[in-house]
Image (cartoon, rainbow, N blue to C red; front, side, top):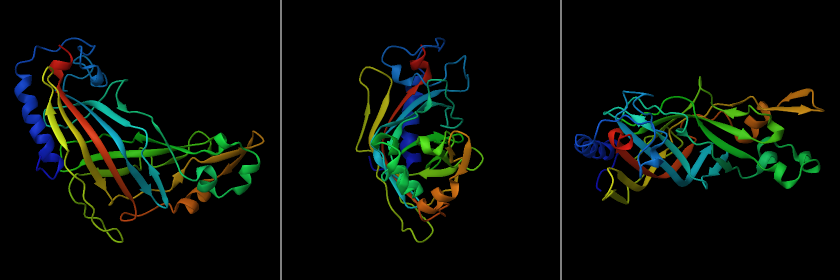
Length: 274
């Protein structure tokens, strides 16, 4: 595959998708057909009649760095749903969207807050910190880059239940591309890579790509919000400032980076819901 950008890749997939869709029966069922169970997050015709293509993307490795914190992606993250014929209007049902997968943050909650004394009160497991990426808007697969608005949920009992970087009103806006980025300084351009393998399933109407490297180092990250330590069960202490200081947040465009190695599956909805 010689394509150097996402729009060309998805254009090839969409063209093949349209061809096999003409031969598929009219979609009516609300349960994916045998062999298409992985597309359960794609809306059925009853749920969203505008959807014509079902997709499933799995980020298998990489890293996400914002401010001074760099989190390796060690647990697969799945984005699933459906789009219209132009790969726009992404939507999903209760089984789709972005899976809430925990990634371990190096340094734990002490590294995030600088509160060294926590080691005297918490065990090793309680000191661990996790980051969960959540959707904060609608993904768009139709451009030269995958537009992905997200927020990052920081999970540890010390932080309360609502500690986030980014929100639905102020998301982290990723523009993931297999091509070359154009970030503001001090970051320099970095390049992704097209898929190492592209195939059509010999028995099912599914296109698959493997190990596409998607990159972005031109996005900004806002400060933390909702991070609250509750002492003695009723005394709230705002930790946003500590989190921001220890993590160098907010961090402007040109100081952050993500690299994600992903697989993609694409199928006509008429095949998924025959």
